[in-house]
Image: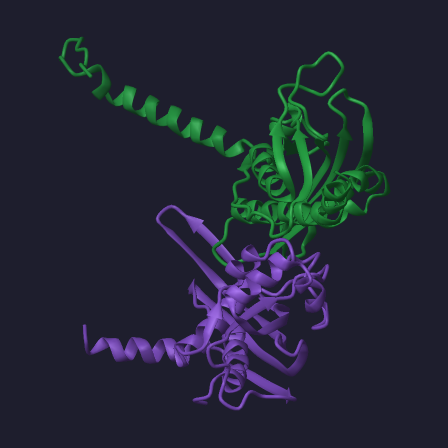
Length: 236
Length: 219
């Protein structure tokens, strides 16, 4: 960078004492303004593939825009005034991609929201996840030395034409104890990762137990079972 | 410098609060020659609403055992629960040894358990809490000077219970309970000097020593 010189004493404009102090003041002001902003946590974690026999279904998944970019801030304030912003969208997508890929025989991403006018790949059903609610608690709020994240999901299982097969809600919860030398952000991130893992565990263990899902699954499971295949061979 | 080192170490040793620990052990079926080739996993209970067993305490126990007998293979807690996701999450973890049988009915789970060759599963339930905080301290900072004055004290209480499951027989074979209590102090004359009672570390050593006796043929 070339400095410009001017003035009677030929002192660099950037070296003038007044200029330096103004720059320092501006830097301090910027720092102070930064300090007043919300604490942002971009949730990041690694999620293991579930250890299970995959269900014999070709499942489609459609992540709505608000799910993919999901973030949470205090409901009582605006986004800018909130003390905390917890961005969970990318981690949500990563976790559900991993869980669904291990849970079903085939996982297919939809090109658009399922509906009669939408061209989409042919699948047995399409799962659409939503985060209806997210709450967090940190020790400064609760006086309990635990960081907590609570989420309520809503799932829609629909046909590619958009007809509803099942709709249900599911809670997920994650907490982590305070740890020495662990920042609030790191602890909230860890609690969110625990909550996401819990969401995956809850979904895996409860999905096939839902009456509407079970009624939908039974023909597909029966048709793909070894007994059904043998029966089919006998008949042919 | 070298002459000062022992003095510094001695001073640091004196700056530890006192800790009282107690261990109760109840073992039904201890392996006579240790666990042999089988591996061991130590897991923390995390299903209670108001507390959870600290992951670093579980790590401390694993380190205690493997440092003293490298022949005992302890699988890392996170490695184990990741390898068997989602069957050992707080929501899904088995609460009784008989529940393992239900898990092993899934072929993929049974296969993974065979690969890990886990002979014993040790569940740790408990935590360390601070209580009875007292005293007061005031700190001030001025141009070119700053400092604190006062005295603070608090109590740390640790209570942990280890439950040992034999995965071959799918039964509980032992239970070890440890409690440790200590008082920590922080006097401050310009500079606060923390005198911390190593309560959690003492609980780890007490419980680790008992588990080592159970798992190792050399102790």
